[in-house]
Length: 452
Image (cartoon, rainbow, N blue to C red; front, side):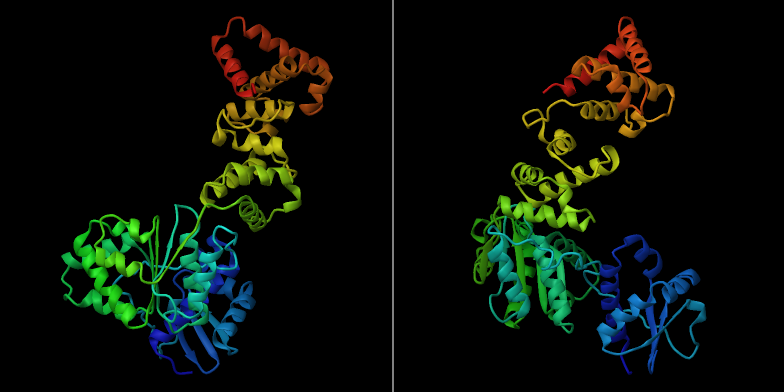
């Protein structure tokens, strides 16, 4: 198999992209695949250089089937893979040198954002359809595609999804994803550098698809606008595809030259609005499943509450869900998620105006544990350090005074302690409250947090 250095480098880059997605373990990928490259391809043997002997051993054993399968998919050939360290490579071959990009060297398309995991609803259906249609035939239909919406509604996801789709289905195409800040920074370095005046323009001649995020940040940057105007026209006139995103409609972009706004309006402009409840619930379900959890453990009213309360944008929705997942794994440690648990987990987000659950012994234990930077299991367990013991007695006292539960029932909550142990703990708190002003302040604060 005769291949140029550039072709071999691009081939391994595509293979690594797929490995990263299927592996789904960032630590393993960074530790053992980082810095690897194809040293040579000789007949049916592919020699891959890795960063250590341990990496060579692990990839040759545990991950050989995974890598071989991806290599087969990418090359349509059955190669025998050989993993070696740099000092073990045959002296007859020369290490390929990757062609380092002169501009936007750190530009990457995030392989985790695809059309498959983009949740489609009424608010974004047109944008999703347009993105997929244009990704299927880049440069043939609407140019540019201009997607606008408020922050956090999926514009960036769609840009990366288009890039991944085009790379997967048109491997010869050069796809460049950049933010407008990236373009501005690169232009400034270009202006103040020693490069020839045509270098940046020449670079963009090799780009087949240009994906630019947050084009509104180009405003009031006259010289940068001039360069972008030239590049925009050159790409469109060459049949190259451009996709832009912004936080507002092209006509509402202030500080941009009229001729540039006119170009932005010349293609297809589509808005993404805030997601409706149905879309939010679908997003929540997909995220829950992506975290390896069973959606059946989440009550439907929990999903509806999150969809209603955190529907401003997808980032806010995901942030609230992440807080809930952290809470049930590290604090509450429960598999069944009902409204009481859900509201407890996001109470700091919804504030005093949000709905609160009715007071329960579980909520009191969780609140006291959180106040003293403990976990509920530490509070109800058998550890007897002075700090934990005091927090435990306070929790018993609050359950007794605020819920009027029997001492025996309280003892069952704390690992099966008998009623006399609970009674002594409550009495210790009552006695200390007469002289300990710090304890008085702590009890007062806890009661405020627990009041509906």
